[in-house]
Length: 559
Image 1: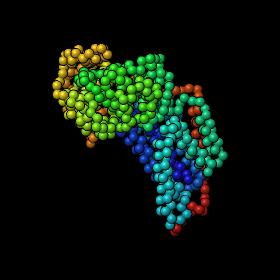
Image 2: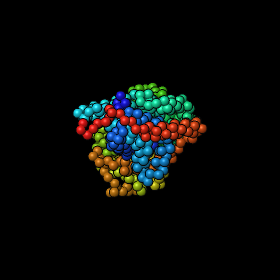
Image 3: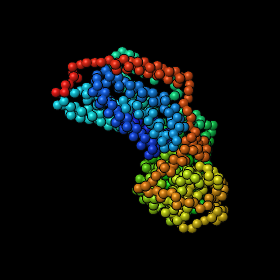
Image 4: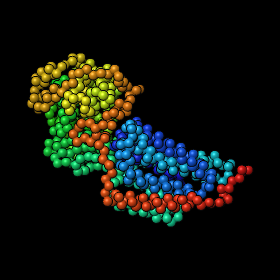
C-alpha cells in the first residue's frame, strides 16, 4: 500500500509543481525538461541509495521514516516556492537555467526520498532469494500503477477543482499520516497533526506572491492551461494568465479598446477595406472581437480559444454575452488554433493572430507550415496580422526577425508596426502584417489609402495615426533560422526577451516578480514548520542509530 501511495504522490507532485513553475518560467521546453529531468535524477539516486540502505540494516520503522521525511519536505513546498522562484531568477546566470535551479531545490530531495521507497520495500518483502524477481517485479508494477493513477487523478480531478497549495499540502500530509499511523510511534503522529492544523491557520504565503498583478481580485481559477486571475482597478477590469496581462476592459464602455496594441488590429481594414469575414486566433477577454462587432456592423467574427475557462470568464466578467446579442455575427470555437485552421472550410478576409503562452506565441503557431495553411484560408485580398513581442535590434529581436523571415516565404508583402514608438530598440508589442497581394506600399501611400477610407476617419480616429508607425527600415534575417515544424528553436530565441522587462500597460515583465509576502501569520507558520523539522531530525537520528536484528532479514550467503 505504501509503495502504491508513493507512486501516486510522485506523479501528482510533478504536475502540481509544474503549475507553480509555469506562471514564472512559462510553459517552455526548458521548464518541462527541467521538471522531468530533475524527477528522473532524484528517483535514480533514490533507487541507488535505497538499495544500499536496505542492505545495511533494513527495518520497517526506517522505511516509514523515509516516507514521512518525504511528506514533510513536500509540505514545505507551497511556503517556500515564491522565495525559491525569486532566488532562482536572480542568481541563475541564464534565464533558461533558472527553472532548472528552482525545480532542483523544490523537487530533488522529495523525489530522492520517494525513489528510496521501492528498492527498500523489495528488501523488506523478500523472505527468500527464490522469489526475489517476482517480488521486485510486483512492487515496481504497483509503484507504476500508482504513478498512472496519480497522473490521471491530478490532471482530470485535482488541478481543475482545487488550489495548487492544497493539493501539494494534501500530498505531503498523506505520506506523513499514513507512514506515522502504520509504522511510527507517537511523536510523528503528533507532528503530522500539527501540520494538519496549519491548514486552518490563515496565511497569504502559500504559492502566492510569485507574480504580482494590479487591483482587487474578482475571480481566480486554475484552468487546464494556466492560472487565471481577473482584477478590478477603478473602472478597468483586467484578465491575467499566469500573472501576465492578456486583456483589459473599461466597465462603463466594454467595447472600447483599453490596451494600445489591440487598436492596431484595425490596420487590417487599411489593406482590405471590404473585409467581411474575420478570424481572431486567441480570445482572452475578447477585447478585439467585441470592438469589431461594434465598429463593423457588416462583419462576421470567428474566435478560436483553446482554454474553455477563458471563454467562460469572458462571457461572465467581460460582457461578452451581453454585447453578442446577435449570435449570428460571432462564433466561438474552443479548440487548438492550428487544428481549427487546418480543418475549417471557411475563407477569411482578415486573420488576427493573438495567441500567447507566457510572453511568446506557441511554437506550432509560428512555423512555415502553419503560415502556409493560413495563406490557403485567406480570400483574394486577405490579410494576416500577427502580434509579437520583441525589438528590432540585438538579441531581443531574434524571435521577431525569425517570424518575419518565415512569413516572408509565404506572403508577398510584409509590414512592421511597432506599437510603442519608432524606437524599435525597446522590447514591445509588434504588429507584423502580411498580405496576399504583392503590392508594397510606403508610408505616404498608406496615408493616402487611409484618407479615402471613411471607416478610419469616422469610427477609428486613432488608426490613421498608426500609419505613421510603419517601420520602413530593412529587416536583417540572414542570421536567424527559418521556423519549421521540424526545427523551431523558439525557446532559444525567446530567452533574451523573457529575461528583460518589456513595454505594455500594466504589464509586469519577467524581471519584475515580487517576493514572498512576509506577514506575521507567514512567519509564525514557517516557525512552527521549522520546529517540527527540528523535532523530526532528532527523532530520525535516534531511530537510524537503532540496530534492529531480526532473524527475518538474516539471509545467509548460502541462501
